[in-house]
Length: 278
Image (cartoon, rainbow, N blue to C red; front, side, top):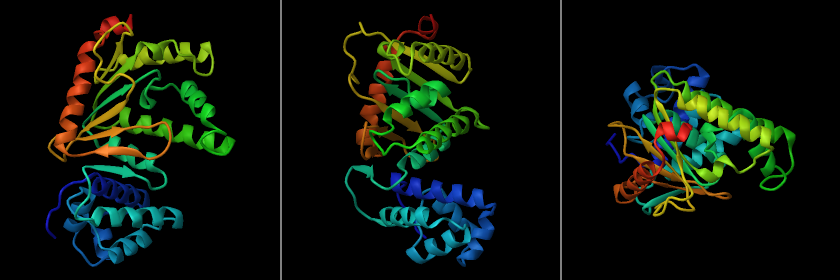
Protein backbone atom coordinates (compact mmCIF):
# COMPACT_ATOMS: atom_id res chain seq x y z
CA UNK A 1 0.00 0.00 0.00
CA UNK A 2 1.57 3.34 -0.95
CA UNK A 3 2.38 5.71 1.85
CA UNK A 4 0.11 8.76 1.97
CA UNK A 5 0.48 12.14 3.65
CA UNK A 6 -0.18 12.03 7.38
CA UNK A 7 -3.21 14.30 7.43
CA UNK A 8 -5.19 15.11 10.57
CA UNK A 9 -7.98 12.81 9.37
CA UNK A 10 -5.58 9.89 8.96
CA UNK A 11 -3.96 10.66 12.31
CA UNK A 12 -7.38 10.63 13.97
CA UNK A 13 -8.43 7.40 12.25
CA UNK A 14 -5.19 5.62 13.11
CA UNK A 15 -5.17 6.69 16.75
CA UNK A 16 -8.87 5.85 17.15
CA UNK A 17 -8.34 2.36 15.74
CA UNK A 18 -5.30 1.86 17.96
CA UNK A 19 -7.35 2.88 20.99
CA UNK A 20 -10.11 0.41 20.06
CA UNK A 21 -7.55 -2.36 19.46
CA UNK A 22 -5.89 -1.83 22.82
CA UNK A 23 -9.25 -1.67 24.59
CA UNK A 24 -10.22 -4.95 22.91
CA UNK A 25 -6.96 -6.56 24.06
CA UNK A 26 -5.88 -7.46 20.50
CA UNK A 27 -2.42 -7.44 18.96
CA UNK A 28 -1.62 -5.95 15.55
CA UNK A 29 -1.07 -9.50 14.26
CA UNK A 30 -4.51 -10.64 15.42
CA UNK A 31 -6.13 -7.55 13.90
CA UNK A 32 -4.31 -8.14 10.62
CA UNK A 33 -5.50 -11.75 10.42
CA UNK A 34 -9.11 -10.62 10.85
CA UNK A 35 -8.92 -8.69 7.57
CA UNK A 36 -6.54 -11.02 5.74
CA UNK A 37 -3.58 -8.66 5.87
CA UNK A 38 -0.18 -8.59 7.57
CA UNK A 39 0.68 -6.66 10.73
CA UNK A 40 2.57 -4.06 8.73
CA UNK A 41 -0.73 -2.91 7.22
CA UNK A 42 -2.22 -2.34 10.67
CA UNK A 43 0.88 -0.44 11.77
CA UNK A 44 0.79 1.67 8.61
CA UNK A 45 -2.79 2.78 9.21
CA UNK A 46 -2.32 3.32 12.97
CA UNK A 47 0.59 5.68 12.17
CA UNK A 48 -1.49 7.57 9.59
CA UNK A 49 0.54 6.44 6.57
CA UNK A 50 -2.48 4.88 4.89
CA UNK A 51 -6.15 4.03 5.34
CA UNK A 52 -8.49 1.05 5.06
CA UNK A 53 -11.23 0.57 2.51
CA UNK A 54 -14.81 0.45 3.83
CA UNK A 55 -14.99 -3.37 3.95
CA UNK A 56 -11.71 -3.71 5.85
CA UNK A 57 -12.76 -1.02 8.29
CA UNK A 58 -16.14 -2.65 8.90
CA UNK A 59 -14.54 -6.05 9.54
CA UNK A 60 -12.00 -4.54 11.91
CA UNK A 61 -14.69 -2.72 13.89
CA UNK A 62 -16.58 -6.02 14.20
CA UNK A 63 -13.40 -7.68 15.46
CA UNK A 64 -12.91 -4.93 18.05
CA UNK A 65 -16.61 -5.14 19.05
CA UNK A 66 -17.11 -1.41 18.62
CA UNK A 67 -20.55 -0.05 19.52
CA UNK A 68 -22.93 0.99 16.76
CA UNK A 69 -22.78 4.69 17.66
CA UNK A 70 -18.98 4.75 17.62
CA UNK A 71 -18.89 2.59 14.47
CA UNK A 72 -20.75 5.17 12.38
CA UNK A 73 -18.36 7.90 13.44
CA UNK A 74 -15.30 5.81 12.57
CA UNK A 75 -16.72 4.79 9.19
CA UNK A 76 -17.30 8.44 8.34
CA UNK A 77 -13.80 9.27 9.55
CA UNK A 78 -12.57 6.55 7.21
CA UNK A 79 -14.29 8.31 4.31
CA UNK A 80 -12.54 11.56 5.25
CA UNK A 81 -9.18 9.78 5.57
CA UNK A 82 -9.47 8.27 2.07
CA UNK A 83 -10.06 11.60 0.36
CA UNK A 84 -7.24 12.55 -2.00
CA UNK A 85 -7.87 16.29 -1.93
CA UNK A 86 -9.15 18.75 0.66
CA UNK A 87 -8.62 22.34 1.68
CA UNK A 88 -5.73 23.63 3.76
CA UNK A 89 -7.60 23.04 7.02
CA UNK A 90 -9.68 20.24 8.49
CA UNK A 91 -12.79 20.88 10.55
CA UNK A 92 -13.86 17.94 12.71
CA UNK A 93 -17.66 17.88 12.55
CA UNK A 94 -18.13 14.28 13.71
CA UNK A 95 -19.56 13.34 17.14
CA UNK A 96 -17.25 13.24 20.19
CA UNK A 97 -14.52 15.28 18.52
CA UNK A 98 -12.93 15.85 21.95
CA UNK A 99 -11.98 12.15 22.06
CA UNK A 100 -9.94 12.46 18.86
CA UNK A 101 -8.22 15.62 20.13
CA UNK A 102 -7.38 13.68 23.29
CA UNK A 103 -5.80 10.89 21.21
CA UNK A 104 -3.62 13.42 19.40
CA UNK A 105 -2.52 15.00 22.68
CA UNK A 106 -1.67 11.59 24.12
CA UNK A 107 0.44 10.80 21.04
CA UNK A 108 2.36 14.10 20.87
CA UNK A 109 5.91 14.48 22.15
CA UNK A 110 5.42 18.12 23.13
CA UNK A 111 2.32 20.27 23.58
CA UNK A 112 1.81 23.99 24.01
CA UNK A 113 -1.40 25.53 25.37
CA UNK A 114 -2.43 29.17 25.16
CA UNK A 115 -5.81 30.47 26.24
CA UNK A 116 -7.35 33.77 27.22
CA UNK A 117 -9.24 34.29 30.49
CA UNK A 118 -9.45 30.60 31.42
CA UNK A 119 -7.03 27.93 32.60
CA UNK A 120 -6.39 25.35 29.81
CA UNK A 121 -8.28 22.08 30.32
CA UNK A 122 -5.19 19.95 30.89
CA UNK A 123 -4.10 22.27 33.72
CA UNK A 124 -7.48 22.47 35.46
CA UNK A 125 -8.03 21.14 38.96
CA UNK A 126 -10.94 18.75 39.40
CA UNK A 127 -13.10 21.38 41.15
CA UNK A 128 -12.29 24.04 38.54
CA UNK A 129 -13.05 21.65 35.67
CA UNK A 130 -16.34 20.68 37.29
CA UNK A 131 -17.32 24.34 37.65
CA UNK A 132 -16.46 25.07 33.99
CA UNK A 133 -18.44 22.08 32.76
CA UNK A 134 -21.37 22.83 35.09
CA UNK A 135 -21.55 26.38 33.67
CA UNK A 136 -22.04 24.84 30.20
CA UNK A 137 -24.73 22.41 31.39
CA UNK A 138 -28.16 23.39 30.14
CA UNK A 139 -26.60 25.87 27.70
CA UNK A 140 -24.47 23.95 25.21
CA UNK A 141 -26.37 20.71 25.83
CA UNK A 142 -29.58 19.73 27.58
CA UNK A 143 -29.33 19.77 31.38
CA UNK A 144 -27.85 16.46 32.51
CA UNK A 145 -26.03 15.69 35.73
CA UNK A 146 -24.72 12.51 34.11
CA UNK A 147 -23.28 14.47 31.18
CA UNK A 148 -21.41 16.70 33.62
CA UNK A 149 -19.98 13.66 35.40
CA UNK A 150 -19.04 11.97 32.12
CA UNK A 151 -17.25 15.03 30.79
CA UNK A 152 -15.43 15.59 34.08
CA UNK A 153 -14.31 11.95 34.20
CA UNK A 154 -13.07 12.19 30.62
CA UNK A 155 -11.08 15.35 31.36
CA UNK A 156 -9.45 13.83 34.43
CA UNK A 157 -8.57 10.68 32.48
CA UNK A 158 -7.10 12.77 29.68
CA UNK A 159 -4.93 14.63 32.18
CA UNK A 160 -3.67 11.26 33.40
CA UNK A 161 -2.93 10.06 29.85
CA UNK A 162 -0.88 13.16 29.07
CA UNK A 163 0.66 14.19 32.39
CA UNK A 164 1.43 10.65 33.58
CA UNK A 165 2.60 9.28 30.21
CA UNK A 166 5.31 6.60 30.37
CA UNK A 167 7.52 8.85 28.27
CA UNK A 168 7.14 12.34 29.79
CA UNK A 169 6.03 15.00 27.33
CA UNK A 170 7.33 18.55 27.20
CA UNK A 171 4.30 20.63 28.14
CA UNK A 172 4.08 24.41 28.12
CA UNK A 173 1.10 26.34 29.49
CA UNK A 174 0.78 30.05 28.80
CA UNK A 175 -2.24 31.64 30.46
CA UNK A 176 -3.28 35.24 30.70
CA UNK A 177 -3.27 37.09 34.00
CA UNK A 178 -7.04 37.45 33.70
CA UNK A 179 -7.38 33.67 34.15
CA UNK A 180 -5.95 34.05 37.66
CA UNK A 181 -8.67 36.40 38.86
CA UNK A 182 -11.64 35.21 36.80
CA UNK A 183 -13.83 33.49 39.39
CA UNK A 184 -14.98 30.07 38.19
CA UNK A 185 -17.36 28.30 40.53
CA UNK A 186 -16.31 30.29 43.60
CA UNK A 187 -13.35 32.13 45.08
CA UNK A 188 -12.45 28.93 46.94
CA UNK A 189 -12.39 26.95 43.67
CA UNK A 190 -10.15 29.61 42.14
CA UNK A 191 -7.73 29.45 45.08
CA UNK A 192 -7.57 25.68 44.69
CA UNK A 193 -6.86 26.13 40.98
CA UNK A 194 -3.96 28.48 41.67
CA UNK A 195 -2.48 25.92 44.07
CA UNK A 196 -2.92 23.26 41.39
CA UNK A 197 -0.98 25.39 38.90
CA UNK A 198 1.83 25.80 41.43
CA UNK A 199 1.99 22.03 41.87
CA UNK A 200 2.01 21.47 38.10
CA UNK A 201 4.86 23.95 37.68
CA UNK A 202 7.03 21.81 39.98
CA UNK A 203 7.10 19.00 37.42
CA UNK A 204 10.39 18.97 35.49
CA UNK A 205 8.66 18.55 32.12
CA UNK A 206 5.95 21.19 32.65
CA UNK A 207 6.26 24.97 32.42
CA UNK A 208 3.55 27.39 33.50
CA UNK A 209 3.90 31.01 32.43
CA UNK A 210 1.60 33.96 33.03
CA UNK A 211 1.13 36.67 30.42
CA UNK A 212 0.57 40.00 32.16
CA UNK A 213 -2.38 42.10 31.05
CA UNK A 214 0.00 45.07 30.77
CA UNK A 215 2.19 43.44 28.10
CA UNK A 216 1.64 44.96 24.62
CA UNK A 217 1.97 43.31 21.20
CA UNK A 218 0.40 39.95 22.01
CA UNK A 219 0.02 38.18 18.62
CA UNK A 220 -2.62 35.84 20.06
CA UNK A 221 -4.74 38.49 21.78
CA UNK A 222 -8.31 37.26 22.13
CA UNK A 223 -7.55 33.84 20.71
CA UNK A 224 -6.40 30.43 21.83
CA UNK A 225 -4.58 27.46 20.37
CA UNK A 226 -3.00 24.12 21.13
CA UNK A 227 0.22 23.22 19.31
CA UNK A 228 1.12 19.54 18.91
CA UNK A 229 4.61 18.38 17.95
CA UNK A 230 5.17 14.70 17.18
CA UNK A 231 8.90 14.90 16.57
CA UNK A 232 9.95 12.97 13.48
CA UNK A 233 6.92 10.65 13.66
CA UNK A 234 4.44 12.97 11.96
CA UNK A 235 3.91 16.59 10.83
CA UNK A 236 3.07 19.22 13.42
CA UNK A 237 -0.59 20.04 14.09
CA UNK A 238 -2.29 23.12 15.52
CA UNK A 239 -5.78 22.94 16.99
CA UNK A 240 -7.82 26.14 17.21
CA UNK A 241 -10.63 25.75 19.77
CA UNK A 242 -13.95 27.54 19.61
CA UNK A 243 -16.52 28.03 22.34
CA UNK A 244 -19.21 26.14 20.44
CA UNK A 245 -19.37 24.13 17.26
CA UNK A 246 -16.71 22.35 15.18
CA UNK A 247 -13.08 23.29 15.78
CA UNK A 248 -10.39 23.56 13.13
CA UNK A 249 -7.10 21.74 12.69
CA UNK A 250 -4.11 22.94 10.69
CA UNK A 251 -1.52 20.42 9.47
CA UNK A 252 0.27 22.19 6.62
CA UNK A 253 3.52 23.98 7.33
CA UNK A 254 2.33 27.13 5.58
CA UNK A 255 -0.14 27.47 8.49
CA UNK A 256 1.51 25.63 11.38
CA UNK A 257 4.77 27.56 10.95
CA UNK A 258 3.27 30.99 11.76
CA UNK A 259 1.12 29.49 14.53
CA UNK A 260 4.11 27.89 16.24
CA UNK A 261 5.95 31.20 15.93
CA UNK A 262 2.99 33.00 17.53
CA UNK A 263 3.06 30.57 20.46
CA UNK A 264 6.82 31.02 20.86
CA UNK A 265 6.23 34.78 20.87
CA UNK A 266 3.73 34.65 23.76
CA UNK A 267 6.10 32.35 25.66
CA UNK A 268 8.76 35.06 25.40
CA UNK A 269 6.32 37.82 26.30
CA UNK A 270 5.09 35.95 29.40
CA UNK A 271 6.76 36.16 32.78
CA UNK A 272 9.61 33.78 33.49
CA UNK A 273 8.71 30.61 35.39
CA UNK A 274 9.75 31.85 38.84
CA UNK A 275 8.04 35.22 38.34
CA UNK A 276 4.92 33.39 37.16
CA UNK A 277 4.97 31.26 40.32
CA UNK A 278 5.23 34.41 42.42
